[in-house]
Image 1 (cartoon, rainbow, N blue to C red):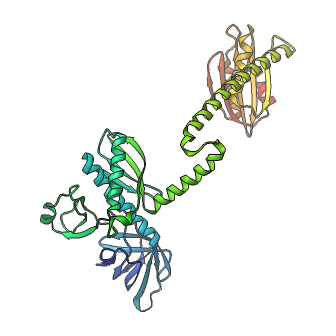
Image 2 (tube, rainbow, N blue to C red; image 1 turned 135 degrees about the vertical axis):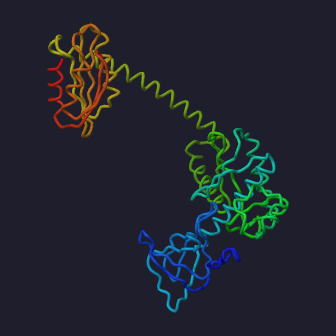
Length: 396
């Protein structure tokens, strides 16, 4: 078996070893198996390490059938079987901070409120824990976050220990063990005792600030999103940069931004309402003009348009047939490479609007819906709007 250097020294960023073998898997990907490795394989909620072996990129590491495979972008040139490994240290320390941050945050929820963590995901931007509870108060979030950061500031030691099942049972484990052999515990004395196979720093201060970003209700549990360490710094920097840009735009300091945005939204909604009312008046006026301008009052009111939303066609068609008995309206718009149509009639007018529209839609591979007095649809511009209009008029 490969010697696991990442357990002996999680701070090992480079190492030398010997090549046991290399080959290709069923997908043709090259991989190498080493006598010893500092690369952590994916497992226990922690992603794998990446880096280089003799200058060749290692893009993932997995434990397959008891052997640790280092997947490579190409075959490994190992003269005399010697291999030099270099770990992407920024990725490793990030994973250590997030994983240990999860231990601390989960223990804080457990110790304070007996809320157990039943799921953990270490993502690229943020991580999540799932709490086994159907109720979570904002005070729970604040107190757990406060305690977690207090543990960080106290610079408590983090111990890793291999124990037997009997030895583990004598300790106040936060959750039951998933294995009965090769038991590895990660311990923050007098705070958290947890079985874990991940890599962790030697003290809590190295985790850095732990910040909860959001909570989300999911069935009978709550998902808590958080960041730790360097990610917390990046989050703070990014949000501070955004707030700095918003300050002059809103003409308000950060503490007054919420009120400024609410006022802005109220103004926006009021303006949109006025604009909609004005647009409705314009459509009503347009409808009356279209009725007046038709040459024959026995024929439907028609209109051909370019790049006009179907929602406006609907309003216009209804306005046309609303004010005059025995009226029909046929409106068509060419929007890009699509034709859209709306047809309507007053309740006393003859004909079936839906049947006429369905017949015309077959010419443009279209689909639509409606009823006897009002129907709409759209399809491909395989014919001109004028040709489609002629078809509709013939059907009506």
